[in-house]
Length: 327
Image 1 (cartoon, rainbow, N blue to C red):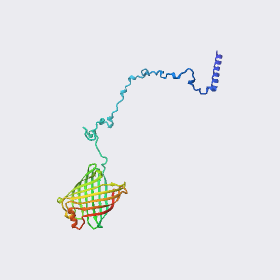
Image 2: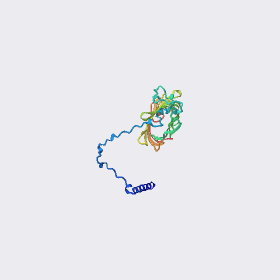
Image 3: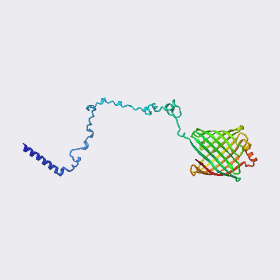
Image 4: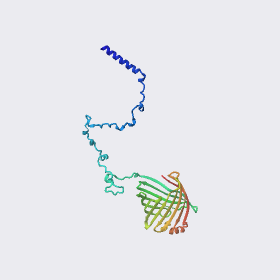
């Protein structure tokens, strides 16, 4: 039997070697032409008739007990512990409205208002700093400036304006205020004023408001009370009209009223004097802007009579030039 088995094994090995050596064994099989297959009607094949696979029976899988899995055992997330654990966050929709109409305020939730602009700062600003020449050919130095230090709500404010003529006459005032913001556009000011220049010096207690009217009209209104029953009211309004991004036209209107005559300073009761100035400035930078302009001044009532008695004009027109700057 052993010689026969050896011959059978050799025949099998030779057949396998012959098959592997044949080129047909290594070539790709020809694609099947289903259309050439006789008797097969592809149109009559019902592809939907294939039986759906049997559903997987998880219960039959050995070793896995799905019944023992507790899907609800995952711990719930406690969002109230995210703020340090001291207090649960208020539920959605329970915070009070912005108008304060809710039953509970923001303070009850530990939410307190605060401002980001409470750091103190300061500024020096001169709207007018230059010279003028009236129609009589007289020159004068003019100024109108202010300095403030403080926050957006409370400031120390120092203001001064006036003129000094080359002939020796001068007039002006210096004021110091505590300025407190009472609304986003208005400040209440409490302080004092001192008159300087020709004539006796006068001291006044002052209270006023300063802010922005509609259409960006800046307004200052200040009332004064002095010794011997003196009272006064000063009004000032101006508007910046942007002709271009750098060229700005500024009309400014001022008026002064007094409660009683002050002959030593040439001031009469009622409407004392008023002025209108028109300035055109060019902002080389935001902080530095040369200007030119013209001003019209007029005295009224008893003040005009005092001026006539002193040989001065009741009205005056001047041209001006100077620089507006701040830092």
